[in-house]
Image 1 (cartoon, protein in one colour):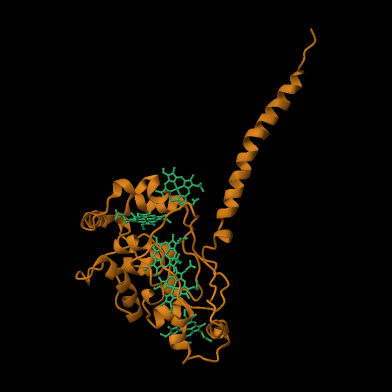
Image 2 (cartoon, rainbow, N blue to C red):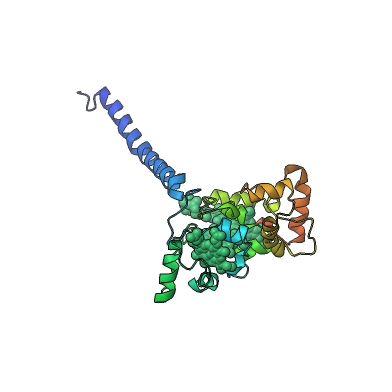
Length: 248
Ligand code: HEC
Ligand code: HEC
Ligand code: HEC
Ligand code: HEC
Ligand code: HEC
């Protein structure tokens, strides 16, 4: 009886199984590499903005509190962006002719909100909440990079799921505590950190790293302190990895 399939067909089959099974994964993999590469996630790449707003200047050199402009950050899920009025409290009087403030003046005169380009986002199916992180004493720079040094705002972290989980598995490493100001609540310490930077107060090596945008705060030899802070601040680490916390 004649062979229906020639031996060579085996190779063809193997190849097509290979192509059918592996190539889609390869494409998915490359796809996700492209969508998550630094270019697309804009890590350390500032976006164009209607006006070249500088955090380095306003938050660090002038020492304006984050909450002055991001009013939601301590009580709400969203930090929020400032309305044009907030800029005009100063810029109706100073730097009134600067071409860099043209878009702000236009927005003010025409009574239309200014459209800032959003630097940081998580997808719609992810729930995120600022207030709880700030209340537990996690400094903005841990998630946003060295905001105090940014002439134009860039994305400090890529906000992949693994990055969130890395801290949720063991937040003890990232809780900020200022030994010089034990009278302040963890949240007050977060904002006071930027006051210290603006005032040029002496910093611990860990604080210096945080100011430079390096996320690991508590050094390994102080792990026990972090663990004690978790208890003190009532952090329930058991549920922090549960899917429903971030996807509900
Ligand atoms: C004078 C007002 C002002 C102050 C003070 C201020 N910001 Fe901002 N911030 C802005 C404006 C305007 C934008 C939008 C333009 C941009 O992205 O640069 C912004 C954007 C941001 C973003 C990116 C938002 C996005 O699009 O995802 C982060 C993160 C941020 N600010 C953090 C901080 C932190 C941390 C502090 C305090 C250390 C602070 N800001 C203080 C005005 C301010
Ligand atoms: C508390 C006062 C204050 C507030 C509020 C404020 N600024 Fe400023 N801004 C300043 C000062 C002071 C300068 C100083 C310029 C310098 O010394 O270089 C400045 C400079 C600037 C410049 C650079 C101007 C140039 O031509 O170099 C831009 C752009 C700017 N601010 C945007 C904003 C925006 C946008 C907001 C609102 C989100 C804002 N500012 C809110 C005080 C303020
Ligand atoms: C635990 C990480 C984390 C910390 C700490 C954190 N942020 Fe954010 N921030 C995010 C994420 C994630 C987003 C994107 C949220 C989204 O897409 O809904 C974001 C978005 C923002 C935005 C854009 C506007 C908005 O509300 O979505 C601003 C402004 C901002 N953060 C400011 C701050 C400031 C100021 C602090 C410190 C007081 C801070 N953040 C602390 C993770 C963090
Ligand atoms: C540097 C550490 C750290 C990072 C990074 C971090 N978190 Fe958290 N997260 C915490 C801590 C601490 C808590 C508070 C847990 C508690 O008090 O029991 C928390 C709580 C939460 C909660 C619970 C809020 C509630 O209302 O119960 C959500 C949701 C959450 N985080 C989402 C995220 C997402 C999404 C990301 C990534 C974009 C993220 N977190 C990144 C430390 C972190
Ligand atoms: C601390 C917050 C957090 C927790 C807990 C969490 N996720 Fe996510 N998840 C995210 C973020 C942020 C993204 C979006 C960024 C990304 O795609 O990596 C995401 C994306 C996803 C996606 C989209 C696919 C992808 O990788 O892009 C799936 C599916 C998912 N999560 C499933 C889960 C499951 C299942 C669990 C429980 C085992 C879980 N997540 C727990 C934060 C979280």
